[in-house]
Image (cartoon, rainbow, N blue to C red; front, side, top):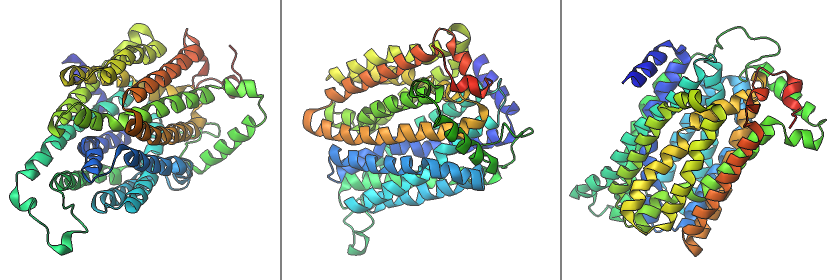
Length: 455
């Protein structure tokens, strides 16, 4: 209870923009949870296979990856508030299209548009939180942001598992459709129950817009020439200046730059996550025989444990250090993930799945903080855009490849591949930043220190 009380007290002390942003994310979490449980199952119920699901994910994520840098420029030009609002509107419109229009072309087109809008939301996240917090607040703010989203996602996942069963139990909702409704609602009973649940999820997300309209674009504290906000016009000049400096660097120095290292980490993690994570719901429902309600409960349990462990991340930093707290739990999650892929036992997989997710994701907020701290403050906008582009594009490629591999060879190969890629990412973090070396790359370092890294 003391831990929860501490976080509540911290929330009250956060800056106004940070509190409003947390509230918006929390309100949208229920929708996120429902989508995570049901969307892939909806496509399967429509008759699509994992290779097509992978293509939808690929196209959507490529849209997000291509829009990351233009979205960053929009932040420079119009500010974080406008980008968040219009990005969310675009996601909402495209998301409705993905649910209602069921032909392959429109599923792919709406996924691409949703990716564009999602990029606008993603690119704002870490720099916005970093800008609206002090060094002391930051670990708690990033962790609380993730925890609030996880808690409301748990509610959404539990609801997402139950809603299709409830809709299927209402005879008039499952009755044969008149001809004029065939374009909007799926004729298959199972697919329609998923579709109605997803449409309800979209309506639940509407209140999350209210805090966004209340945000202020003002940056707390004075802004100097050398520390301009990423969402100011000067931020674009800083980014272009940084890129010009990098072109003059020797290749070896550039490869050891902390930003380059973290981009490589995002490439490895993004590829591994894309191969496996989008198909966990299909794996449990089709391969292990779980119902959608049971998978919703399993995923909700996973996010509940994830939220509890995420709250402990700042405490873990104090005990073993920042880099160890980032690496050790993820290392422990890898054999658990492999065991899930090797077993055909639903009870065992259901027991291990929350443990895998809790260990892997408890340091996600820490990774966001760490990724911001290893680059100078004036470069964080560019850094976040680079991280997100690297992750999203490789996630898209991984998701497309994962769908094909599952359709042709089964699930084990993607479990093994993801384990290898995650292992390489963790080795890279430890090699470059372990043993107390990460302090060299904090934002407080001078530009020359951050650009020239010694081993």
